[in-house]
Image (cartoon, rainbow, N blue to C red; front, top):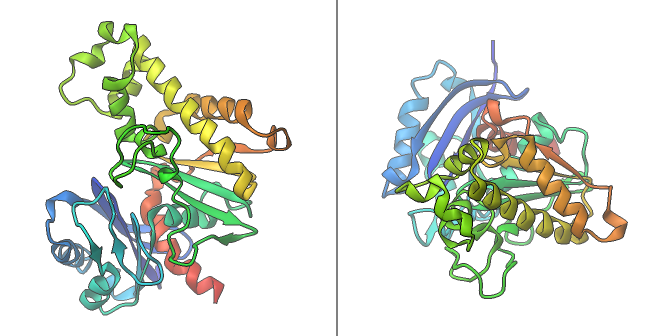
Length: 315
């Protein structure tokens, strides 16, 4: 019998995942919906309420943990998230709190993933690590000396918006050359059209009308040379950037999470190769690349519910 659960909600640019999670990380209810279907965020809140309130575990909900792009942990607002259809400032935490009559906490989506890894995943043994979320965009959650780094606005860890290519690809944030424009699901798709490789004209990817990152990895597995070059380019860009980021927090490990990370150990090994190739000598052979253990356990839901329980544990 589960006595207490938290509602974990992960709001992504494409989908929103939500579920009820016990304090030991057991997901007792979960579901997903299309974020972009809801032009008004209040309608998304109502949909989740209607779904969750039907669960037998609903009376045991202690509170709500929400992970979202550009989620400000201090204000409870989503603020100018480039990968969401809702623009401006969205008071998402208060919306859920008013609808559910439960306390609601908001955190950056990548911070939520880092909390989930620390409590339930492959970072249980780590005090210093960075979670890199590879989805529609690229986020990061940074742990230093056992504490999550949040910053004065609650928005620390925007590695995806560190510019890695001067005057590079246009980003949804309005700037050019951000890491996520090269290393994310959307970045991989952009590479199909933008990389200047002679072999691309013989690639089956060029025949697809709306290719996805998954198509690229499937093509790689089928021996497509251009797909292999795209993945090599993506891994090199990420590994090189992680080598530079190590100078900030000196992590023991980077934890890769999200669709691209699920493609297998081969990608992680390539990232590790380029990390070592570009790292300062003092960091070489000191940093692990781990792949999330929570992919088959809905890490998004675990992470956002973990953010609520983490607050309780820290008090």
